[in-house]
Length: 430
Ligand code: NAD
Ligand code: G6P
Ligand code: MN
Ligand code: MN
Image (cartoon, rainbow, N blue to C red; front, side):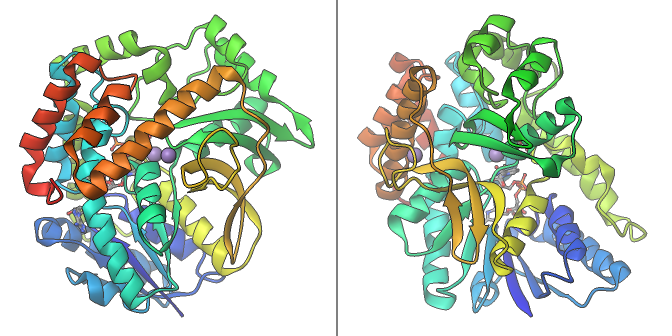
């Protein structure tokens, strides 16, 4: 049987990953599942871990669930390690959202200055985890969802020997939207999806060998709602969609509609708090539900979180590797020439087929100017973020912010100083 370690096991998303393993138990015989957390997450781990045990018991599958604070015990001889941890917990996220807002810049946990702060906190931890994997389970696959997922995956590829694939639910949301508006079964379409994590474009949607992207865009122009739960569903505008001719991801709103999004963020923050503050309440309610000893399945309310479906995608990805399936997934992998206008060692998000060797990207036609420039800038920002996160270099972090289109350059220094000051306990590299 397989051994799997889930780092950040106290996450409220854990019931989804458990459901995913239960559903697939015949093809993916997970025997030992370790949910790992840290002292601060002990209570959450207990609550969600006990729900996980009840789910397994009810389903009658032969799987052992272990709750532990001992990461090395969990990683030792694991076949797969998944990461869904949040360094500094939600309080750190709320700070990431509020610091840029103070300077009238987008305050978002993965996109813009907030994403850099999260990367700087997370990189030392992921590198530590990878050291454990290199020593205790060198053949294990690391499936990373920890955000910023593309940057964290890039840090792993550039600085460790660990086999790593990064994952996000946004491509799945794009795929499901497309199937929905085309009114076809979601297994019958494939997206030509290319870009970076949270900056990915659907260049095409293929149904029975035919291009359907124009039809999908027509529905968006007609006002079909489309976003992730954590991003307001602001209208894109007909001209923008028509001239783009591709399906933008929900996060593109921060780049394409910056001032509208900023205004919206400021207003929401005043009324309900930042997204992190809202999530704090949602999470509290979820954990109250999880405590109920009669609850033995994933509750519907988990759909109020922006990351819905991502753990199920992880289970499917793990099964594709384990069973050498050769199925299609949208994942974060090393570029290696796939996109010809960015470096080989960049991490990209791309349509891939997945087998026991890992994820293999489909070839990419040269990118048109309208998406190439933005992708290149953000990719170089990410390279700087990785370098700053690994070496703790102030100047590199500053340049990362200065070149980021969502950071007002003359505020970059003040934003960075606040980020370092408010996160100093989590920045051993600085
Ligand atoms: P969360 O706040 O519930 O954190 C999950 C757990 O991580 C907590 O129980 C916490 O105690 C634990 N943790 C913190 N530091 C740790 C460490 N050093 N080692 C082990 N555990 C640690 O977070 P969440 O809302 O479940 O999100 C978890 C992560 O997944 C975040 O980074 C989030 O951004 C990311 N996420 C990604 C996607 C995606 O599309 N890739 C979707 C949803 C969430
Ligand atoms: C999804 C993203 C995730 C992100 C999550 C936030 O859109 O793909 O990467 O972490 O939403 O959701 P939350 O409910 O925490 O705001
Ligand atoms: Mn994501
Ligand atoms: Mn990159």
